[in-house]
Amino acid sequence: MNLLLTSGGLRNDELRRNFVSLLSKAPSETKVAVIPTASKNMEGRDWFDRDIADLKSTGVGDVRTVEISELEKSEWLPQLETCDVIFVPGGDVYYLRDQVVRSGLGNELPRLLQSKIYVGISAGSRLLNPDISIAALHYDPSKNPEGLRITDFCIVPHMNSERFKDRTPEIIGGKVKDFPYTTYLIDDNTAVLVQGSMMQFVGGGDHVEFRS
Image (cartoon, rainbow, N blue to C red; front, side):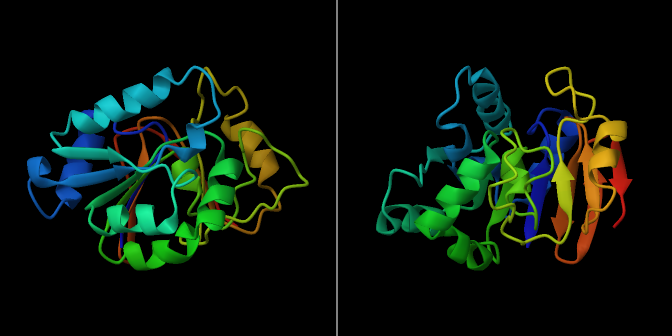
């Protein structure tokens, strides 16, 4: 399993190099399936356009959109099975999780990740975590907090961001005081790279660890 779980996407040279190093073929021969579902109902998606531009700057040759909320499983599954990379940008993590479960992708993803590279951005990274409630964009305690449980840790993105004022070590530290999962607060120049049983921080940015 190869996961590159970012906060702000492939926004610096080191993150882009780490992405390319995961590929089993030349970038120009690599097929990427972008699942934009988390941002579907959001306004002002300039950040989404930047994330796709950063992806394309690595030289990947085939970038296709796979909107699972609008396609039948018989339509989206073949596209994911034939791609090399599953790329999931950010947005509303609750909506993303609900659509992933509803569509059946939640059941298929563990199998797909045996051979595909997964790149997440913000909500796309947190989707794989055991709990998505910490720092959810639209936090609602009445909603199911469960993620897909593909990782055994949780990520909180956008540390010290100007846009997300609550993503400071002090505020997040208070929220996770009695949280049962190890949590990593990462800034927009940082990613968690998972390769099999190995996990490391890459990108050259900053992070804070909160151990359970």
